Length: 334
Image (tube, rainbow, N blue to C red; front, side):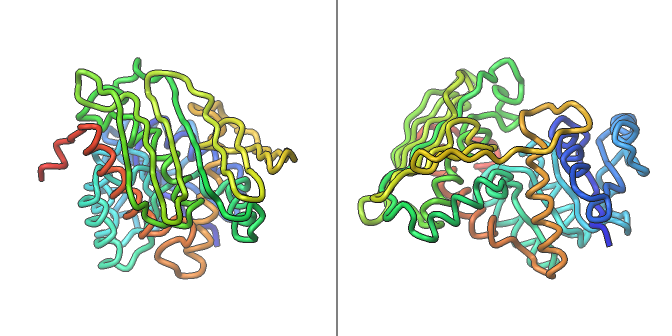
């Protein structure tokens, strides 16, 4: 039986996710419905992607009995209300990152998923790329010895996009781009909570973080540092340095298709899209979708690769970094 997907939100990221799903076998994944705030948007999306059902409200999608799992591609200030809508309707959920605006919202979402006995995962797509799987394998086998330093950077010039400057839209480089660097560091250091965090950054007049630099110290004098910016292009590379060697992601660290392990370079090519993509390498979202299918087939309520505790750890670190940089959202005062 194919996993039957419902798509919540008819924007750019939902387009890319739907294109990525079509690179997987049709017998395994089917998109059966899409919902948008306006019916016309859903109908246009459905026509473009050959989806049979289009809804003009998220509530209609939540009531559809033929949906196994909902992909939530709305902007993150709406993740809490949207996740709760679907979890309370007993729907499994894959929600775009960041899972929510802060730790309190993340915990509310996870509590609802547990109460309703449904699967829920934060869509940190990077973790499911074959290159990321290989990194975890190499680290588990001790190929680098003891890891002493992790460095990552992710910067793109996004200030012309309202979503990157308007606070009410959840703008801020930490939740948009920095999360990729932070999740990478958490993955490499095996979900350990750092002993201390030092964050500094610059904010726009709107009160959202534009660029941040964060250093993290872990037990046994292990370090990590990352830079994130919505104002400038950075090399977007990552490196893991151990006592026996290094792993480098030379570029596109958030969607890695090249690994350099002690000088040996390996490519992990992606399938071609059937429609133009909004974001680079988006067919790589296929890997998180297949992880969801495998979890559902096994009756799991969370993924071991991006678990509920991973989302809690990420949100807590994001909160602390924002606190130090001086970014406060309206959701923080509730």
